[in-house]
Image 1 (tube, rainbow, N blue to C red):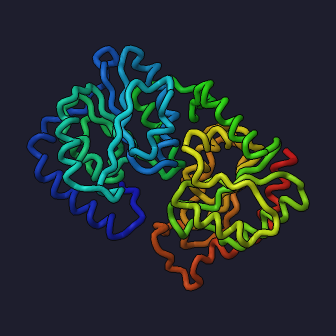
Image 2: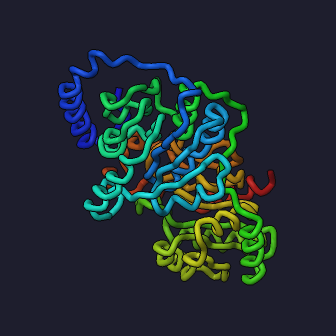
Image 3: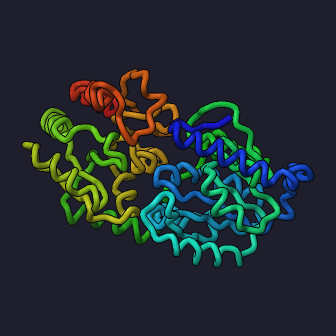
Length: 379
């Protein structure tokens, strides 16, 4: 059973799987899924390179994994941009970074150099957390490891020694918890995840707030998103923020990466109220620290939304395409602003095929979001 929305990608994956199972069939005849002995696992590699929000949603896997394999060294392979969310994490012993050319604009020759070095490392257990055929073929397959664990719903099951069962579509974070359950990890009701700032970093966050004359309480706003189709309209963000400032009298702080600065500048240019604008000025860890101090986070469906969820910051998210049951803020107080469009389940977010372009975003009004903000603040 595959979990792929894009039809072209699904066809390519099925074809690759047919070829893969044919090529590997002699080996598969003698391969039996083995139970994983915790005492035999000394080195673990977790692979999650794409994307920031997905990497954040992998973090709840770490503590149960460390408790299940207490004598093991855990190495986490992720992208350069996502590395910051793993720094100072008590359950990660080493961070490796690589930007795969199948996800990011990078040189293919760098892959050859990277995989050559990775093959020289010794791992007992390799966990590919995405369930992606490309990751399995190009990152997991070349490695020598006794146990290779992932889902087969994205293809590549023939590479794995152990396949995590897939029964139904659920929240992305739950898939990572399913990996922990499969490995026999003990699971607590409350998960532990987030960005672990050092004491020095926390003092730096307070200094940023003081230097920019940001008093508490305040609201953080992030109008950006990796996919343009996830971004609510600048004029609506501007109107909403003006209402929040005028009627609720709460300072507004804009956050965003350097490449989102133009989007945020456009929103601010349409506002009457003058907010504090920290877009493009903060590291990912500094932004996480500012978020942790905010009373509420207002955003599109994006990576920072998941950071806010991990920090238990109340969130109002404007959810356009894709499925909120798949990637909504997990576990914290939130309001998801979305409309029931039938095309949502088949949307791959790269292009809109609705007759009314971006209809799912157009249907969300300023008044509705403002009421959600007020409701969250009351709670």
